[in-house]
Image (tube, rainbow, N blue to C red):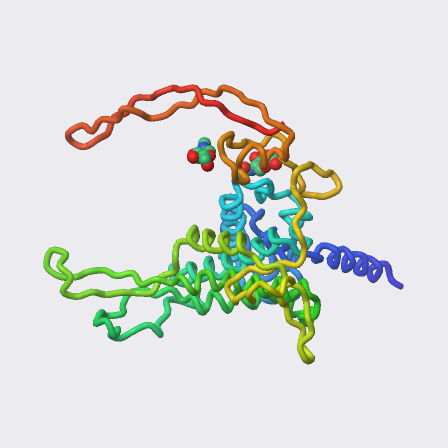
Length: 352
Ligand SMILES: *[C@@H]1O[C@H](CO)[C@@H](O)[C@H](O)[C@H]1NC(C)=O
Ligand SMILES: *[C@@H]1O[C@H](CO)[C@@H](O)[C@H](O)[C@H]1NC(C)=O
């Protein structure tokens, strides 16, 4: 065996281990500069992509910067939605970016897959509308006069393109495994549910034309909801996620609710296979398991952000901290607002 051959094998093994997690492409968010994915050669060097994603990257280099922005959007939205929970979506500098938390089939993993698939569809669609891409633009299938009597016009978001791209890029790993494992089925279902969160909340935005803003002529276009809305929808699905197991129906495998008394989940619901850990303690052997020591909590809340639950019964410390706020703001003619700076002491509670 040549030395080169051995090296290649070692590299491939490395690759197989690194690609053990289907959400590794989120690592693209760690690439800093815009436009850093310029040519096909860069695709080869990107960390976190599996071979079939590298091929898609090469075929669609111009779309990759939107994918990178999508990865960042997913991470930011996850951190916003989970800011008051024990697991708060912290990222690591290594792969997978959320650590061990997403390698099991938990509810949290379900959220991460859904928000990631949605964010790629969203970011690519945005890039289409903004005229950044040659491959796609506005959705010209939306035209003519609507039944309500307004004129379709302007740039309708080409969500079909974004969704199709997300399906091919994000779902590729699960599809290449032949969709046989229950985990692949779970990921695919949640990816699709994430994209549905955009599709089922598309809105119509309109502009009035006519003398001094009168609405003699109204032109409208189809627009995606703000991504925060998408995050809120998926977070609600997280709260009501269904625990499922794999069952064989004929020759195909499907996921069915573990508790047969529950009504079956829909395409828009999230599903999970494994119960979540309690996320209470730091575990050096489990990357991403940071525990809740030092986390801020709310003394009066009975929910998960309350000190009792957040601190897992370990108790909390209270500090007086000074916060500076704008106050007694006055409007001056014309046209500015002047405020005073007020200092006040507030109590801050952190978990022991
Ligand atoms: C998340 O929690 C960790 C500790 O568990 C903390 O260091 C970090 O600042 C938190 N991040 C956010 C965004 O609140
Ligand atoms: C703490 O929780 C209470 C009750 O849920 C809520 O009304 C209050 O706004 C929370 N305080 C902060 C600082 O979030």
